[in-house]
Image (cartoon, rainbow, N blue to C red; front, side):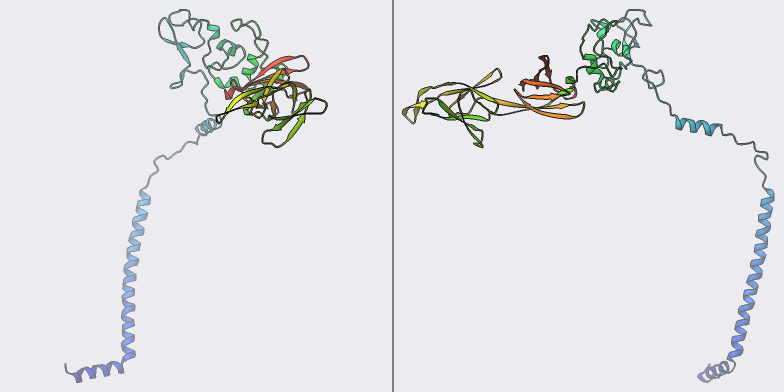
Length: 360
C-alpha cells in the first residue's frame, strides 16, 4: 500500500473516531459477559460438588458420652501437692540409706541392730552408741532420741527451740555425761528455750591481730630529791609520758628499774653504753623495756563477736567488758590457737572463747 492509501485510512478513522470507540467498548463488554457467564457456571458446579461432599460426611461417634473431670482433677491435685520422697523410701532410684552387714555382706538399714537377712548382730565399730553416720558430732542413737535425722548433717546447726544456740552447741554443753548412756541427759535440752548453755558460749573469736608493743623507754632524768622520772613514748612518737616508779601509763604500772651499762664495739671503738631496763607490769605480766630499744613483745587485740545480738568487742589482755549484765576480764589471748581466756568477775569462773564452729 502506498502512502496515499494510508492517509485515506487515517482520514477515515479520524472521521469515524467516535463510532470506532463505541464498537471497541461493545466488544469488550461482550467479552466480559461471556467470561462472567463461564464463571457463574463453574461456581455453580463447585457449589454442587461441595454440597455433595457435605452430604456424604458421617459422624465417627454419633452419640458422645459426657466429659469426665476426674483425670483433670487428679492432675491438678498432683500440681498442688507434688510427691516428695521421704528420707527413707523403697521407690526406684531413691534407695534407703544402708550399711554393709559384716557377716553376710549385704546392705541393711542403717539403724538395724540385728541383720534382717542373716540374723547376725550388727557391728558398727568399737561402740555402736558412738556411731555417727552423718558426721555432725551427734551419734545416731542420740539423734534418734532427740528427734533429729541421723542422715542429715545440717540438723546439728539448726536451733530447734529458738534460744540462740544450735543443736550441736546444746548437745555439747554442760553437764556432760557418758555418750554410751542413753538414759542420762547429755548437754542441755534442744527443745526447751529456757534450758540452754551460758550466754558466754555464744561469744566467739572473729580475729586476733598482733601489733608492736606501743610503749618505748627512751630516757630518764634524776630529780633534785634523787628520785627518777622515766620517758615513755607511744609508738610513732605521738605522745610522751614522764612518770615515776609506781605510776601507771596506758594501763601499765612502772614496777622496777635496773640501771645497767655494758661495753660495746662501736666502729672499732669500745664504748660504755646505757642498757638500763625499766620493767612494766599489767596484771601478773611483767614486760622489761631496755632503754632506746624496740620491745621484743607483741601485743594482741582480739575481735569478739556475740552471735545472740550481733554485738562486737575489741579487747586486749587486761581489759574488762560487760556481757549481758556480767563483767569479764581478758586474762590472756592465744594467737596460735585463736583462743581468748576470760574470767567472770562475779565468781572468778574461767571461760575459753574460740572460733565459731563454722570457721574452724
